Length: 272
Image: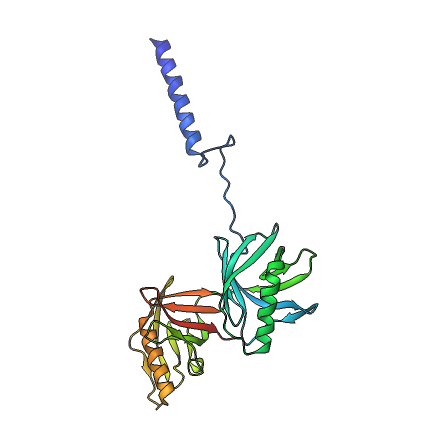
């Protein structure tokens, strides 16, 4: 009888040991019983262009219309040349090779020759990138010969800041840009206040931010200065679009404000 009791005790101890081993490992395969958690790729996030290679020399990025890209965890990117919106794919890490492949891009004419030169450099040289190095908040992309093609600085992030208005929903399922819309601006303050100019009148109010959700208080106050017909029309469209905003998203220096259905109401460009 005593021998049976000892045998049962030994079995119980063995079962408990196996259970402890199983609980101590979150790995479902492999002989080591350990879990390896991949560190987040430090390249993921928004980047603003600071310099680019042109004619064999380093050229400062256009400060009036910053180019930017946001590298997403899924291997996709979106951004702006400072004139047109572009997107595509990327692969790699700072510890190995890095490639970036441009895809679809809008086809708006770039009036400023400095911005046009910047866009040409991006569309021409991004496909030539084969490696990337990261030093602090500075990202450098180089070609197969180690020649620097682009230098980027990390950010911006968040919605706080001042923006020029690049597009306004006209109420007819179209986002339009014109000389009148370009006069409008908006500033999101760190204290929850929102203010700006419709292109004719100044306005102010408050906003509430919760992740990607954005609500602008309906009691926005505006001055009552008389506007020309074109400015008056844009002002009405702008204020209506502002009242419809329910969410926001950022791609580098470009911010898009959308309504609850996901339709674009306003497109904004961060001021330098």
